[in-house]
Length: 285
Image (cartoon, rainbow, N blue to C red; front, side, top):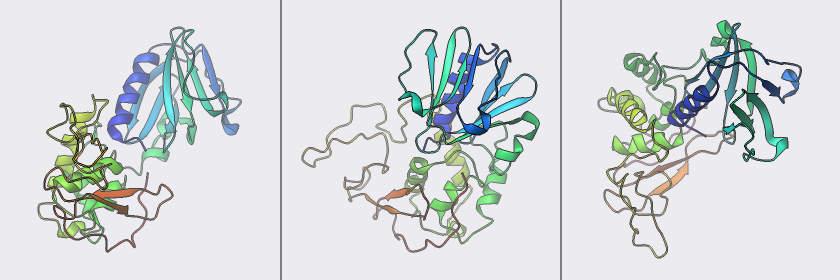
């Protein structure tokens, strides 16, 4: 699932392509919106809210989309061939004279009044990359359930919006903390929102996300036959490979029972105390 930095970049790309221009084409291919036609309306702005995208139009309307696991928006120049997937996967087409934005495999697509956006985003905590970022409020929400494992608390968008599975694993590693440690037992919990903000801000302009010192160097081999490792990330995606800090084999396992089947990556030496608490509510998107 795309995380906050990816959605932020996508919102910027859509905004640059559509904002300030009237639509010359509108095709919303979901049953409840099949008769909606926004042609002629000017796009006011495209903004991210955590992992949600809000495309606002003149007249006080907002098209809300969420990418979940497989969705994406692609932007094409006029006359350019669309290459995001087969036609039956297209859920939305928003076109201007110069650019066309095509939404593929969008599992969430709603049209609502801009004044009612809180109906779809009001449950979210402070947005790590948004104008509402408030580290104190994020910390308060994180600590409201002190018994909850850190990894699951980070994924819950009701606490702070924008963290996904990659940043969950990387944050826990950088904090040298087990993802299963109850957040109320974490020394210096104020480090969590501060570090999360730092990582997403550092990566919002990058297409190749990095959290390590080796982010801009050629990734070397890891010593295992045929195993070439990209060292941009400390533990995420490195199951079975040596920890970049201590050399211990990175492990992976599921952390919470969700339909997304998310997994947690961790170093058992740098982050002692493995999975032992899982009976917690699923995180909100």
